[in-house]
Image (cartoon, rainbow, N blue to C red):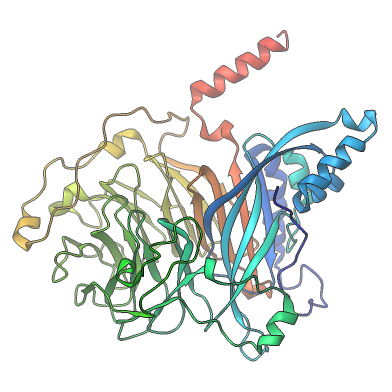
Length: 528
């Protein structure tokens, strides 16, 4: 089994004012309320403070799964995270009175990608961190213990850094390639996008190794060229093909086909490094002039790598087709009342696109209503955020569920009603044919039964566990859909960033009928 030795990410000198330095009374109060709610509202939670700011977090591939016997004490909890075999041995040697408190626990070891943005002039490099997290499976955590071990700016022993890649410039965004999970693309404050085949890099770890290199950055596997101005935050990879899209301050959206650079070794899908025939790649498609201001986010169609969507500071949302980069297949002007900041395309129901804006609103559009789409004519909108929405994402398997995070420090999980999801036009408007663009797939998914919960439309859950006013990124785990990894930028309070991996209690996420049936069974078993 995988061995986890406790290892902390490199850190600057600790603040002499202590762990809570720079945190407001309101932040500490919110944290305490959150921690008190963990045993009731959560199935599990891991929290890890990074010494330096991190603006992006992503899941990679599933590394391994281990089932172990674990005693529910903090001592064995820490040991199991660092060395499952040692925990099992300790459990076997425990006295009979202690062994009675043993219970089975299954962990999933997940590859995750993080970064560190260091202070300029501090003598340390900016980095990509390739790490492995030991995440408890559903219904295996002692949530009371989880709550008791949570600390503001605490370290998580379930996290191990496997590789440190020295990045040229601070990392603004990381996106993994689902078709090649060991390959990631990054954006920094330059015109180029960098691609890193992490399997080709060694396990550079620790300050001594970094000093030996003199902080010299690693060379990216590929450099994606084509932007005429800085491309900082709009980055996406196709789930179905090795393609990367980027948006920048030049108001352009560019798409690259990484297959154009692959050599005879192919894609290296098994985790082995691929061979590349070039180090610089030009775009296969360039969308220029469709947006009027900086492009803030892009996303690919979940099933068709020829289609993608974008949002920008001009408040517009566009659906684009690489077969006709001269025009937008759909162009919604004024999708938001302020800058349009983020976008995601529903994986299950590909007729739905969600956007978030600086107006604090999350909106859901139906592309079958292309000729009628406007800021007011959306399928659903959610208005709980009190500041800009920075990230929006659909649930991987439930087309009625999506989530958003923002500059108010909160991450909301939203639920649409089935009526809202089914709302929308059923006929393709003629605008597609008039513009000469290929029509996106508009066939609605086959009728299916999706969860019916007490809260049929609106807020399903609110995660308030970050000690910051800015939750900059999050992702649903593709392999465990109700597990979420989220990241806050705590630099305003001199706290670096906080990465959390958490799962909502299934008493909240399951259907009402399932929960009632289980409660009835518990009452029956109790003799009640």
